[in-house]
Amino acid sequence: MNDAIILGFAGLAGIGLGTLFFGGLWWTIRRGTSSPCPARWFLGSALLRMGVALAGFYFIGGGEWPRLVACFVGFLVARFTITWLTKPTRITPRDSTPEVPHAS
Image 1 (tube, rainbow, N blue to C red):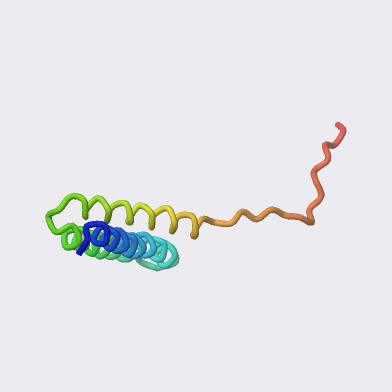
Image 2 (tube, rainbow, N blue to C red):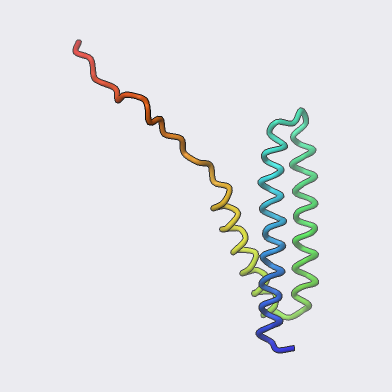
C-alpha cells in the first residue's frame, strides 16, 4: 500500500482510540459522580481506557514512528472534538429582571 494511505488509516485509528478514551472518560465522570462507590468507576475506567489506548498505539504504530505520529494526531483530534461536544452549556436567565441598586 501507499504510505499516505497507511498514514491515513493510522490517523483514523487514532481518532477511534481517542474517541474511546475521551468518550469513556466523559461517560465515567457522569456515572461515577452519582455512584455510591466512585473510586471503583474511576480506577477501573482509567485502567481499561489506558490499556486499550496503549495497546492500540503499540499495534497501530508497528515500530514505525510516522504511523505512531499519525495515530497520535488522530488521538488529539478526537480529544478536541469530544471536549468541544461535551462542554457544558451556559444557562442564562432571560426572564429575570436586572438588579437595581437600592438607595440606602
